[in-house]
Image 1 (cartoon, rainbow, N blue to C red):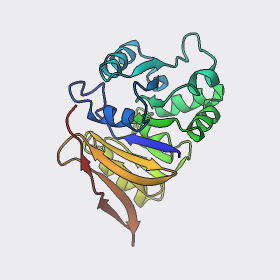
Image 2 (cartoon, helix red, strand yellow):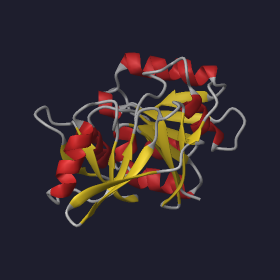
Image 3 (cartoon, rainbow, N blue to C red):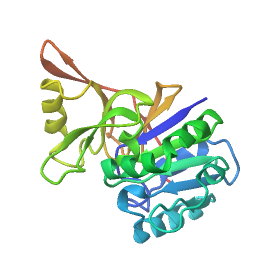
Image 4 (tube, rainbow, N blue to C red):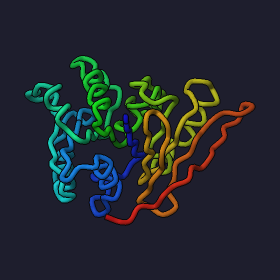
Length: 232
C-alpha cells in the first residue's frame, strides 16, 4: 500500500520537544527500530538541519540516515530501497525537484513506495507529492509549482503559521492558477493511502487541515476531522 504523510509544518526541527508527528510517521512502518532516510535537498544539505534530524529520530529509537546530493552521493537505489521510511525536509521545493530529476530520484522513490516504504515530509516535503504546491521558492511572492503528481490536486503548507499562505492560496484558486486541494496547518499531517486521504492527525489542540475548493467563484474551506495525538 502506497502511503504518503504530508506535514504542514512544525516537525522535529521546529518543535524538538514534541515529536508526536515524527513518532506517528515511524509507527506507520510497523517495524521495530525502523530505518528512516532523510532527504535534505531543499536546504542544500544543511548540516544543522541534518544534525537535528539525527538527534530527534535517534531519540525515537529509529535508525536514521540521510541522502546527500551536494557532497559525495551514494548509489540511490540501493540506499532508498533498504529503508522503512523516507522523510523529505523543508526548503526550496523547486530547486529540490530539479536536483531530484537530474539524478533520477523520483522513479526510485516510486519503486520504493510500491515496495511498502512510507513516504513523508514537511513543507517542501509535503507539497512535493501533489500535482501542485504553493511554494516560497521564489523570493518575491508565493507561487504555484508543478510537483511529482502522486497525489491529485494541490497542497498549501503552513496554512496558519505564515500569514501570507492562506490569502495566497485563495487568490491562486480564484484566478485558476492552482487546482483545489488541501491546506495543512503547522503541527498537522494529512495521511494518504493509495492516493486517498485516510486520516488527519495533529500534535496541537485545535490545529487542523482543510479541503479547499472553488464553488461559484468563491473559495470554500471544509475542515477535516482531525485526531489529536498524545505528546511525545
